[in-house]
Image (cartoon, rainbow, N blue to C red; front, side, top):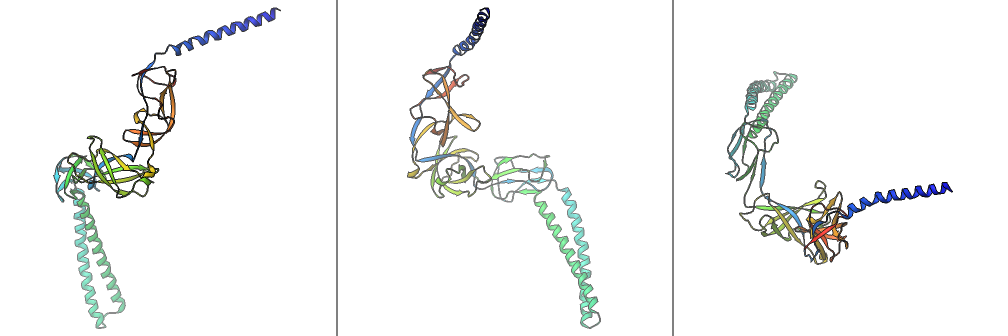
Amino acid sequence: MNTKLYIIGLLGATSLFFSCGDSPEKNTTENTAPVEVTVATPTESDQSFITFSGKVEAVENATLSTRNMGYVIQINAKVGDKVKKGQLLIAINNADLQAKRAQVNAGITEAQAAFNNAQKDYERYQALFSENSATQKEMDDINARYEMAKARLEAAKQQKNEINAQFAYSNITAPFSGVVTDKNVEVGDMANPGMPLLRLQVPGNFEVRASVPESEIASVEQGKKVDVIIKSSGETLEGVVSEISTSASNSGGQYTVKIALDQNHAEIYSGMYASIQFPTTAGDKREMILIPETAIINRGDLQGIYTPSEQNTAILRWVRLGRKVGDKVEILSGLSAGESYITSVEGKLYNGANLSIQQ
């Protein structure tokens, strides 16, 4: 009898202990201050185009560098300067090349003298051989020495051509008439082979480069007219698809598409960002559920959105995204047209957080 009472009493005490332990945690959740949020419902659109981001670039541009290592001793242009084709822009110290050229010139002088002597001997032995005064072996030896001297002279001249070519990389000139858009070096800096020194472009002639994913590249046709929206100004320009890359092996599955602009505008500059609207065929048109891209929550490879529940708590729902349309993105699944989603939040939002929905 005493044993049974003891067990019952122990169970009662244990139950009381866990009951008391659960109570504070439950109260903490209930007493959490609500997070202020604003909500919206998705917009629906029957899109007749698909949109991709791109960047304005000059059709004709060049990045100037050198093959030689040396100190920059002269710079004749700054950013914004207009330059003419052939104009000297940068000079690099070429004292070592001058020393090499002196050695090569000396070698040419020596090789030329040896060739002249070999040529005289060859001509003399030809005359003797024709008079049967020289043997065939003597004639063969003289001919071999003549050919060797001739080859040494040609090799010395070729070395001079190589040195002269290196001098061209010490005196960097403009490959075409244009405007200097970037300068990455100052007088006294060490220039290394391949190092970008100046960037040059022809103003007024621009194109837009866009990256199109594999899933949409079939909708892009060469020669098709498109709308190009400059993001900084909101101006819409007409363009034509001028080139479509045939491989995406080196661009992460993205195909490069070039759009030639029909009009030249002074307020457009290389490096500006743009949105390109490619028209779709009738078969590609469909009702789209769109929400701002800023409302998307990224968790590794997953994308989601926060929605309010009937109890005014936050629910994180995973969604599948489709096309981008300007600053909005298509929702393929995970959110219906009439459902609300959270667009902005004041404070930290998490799954299950109490909400205070602002109007």
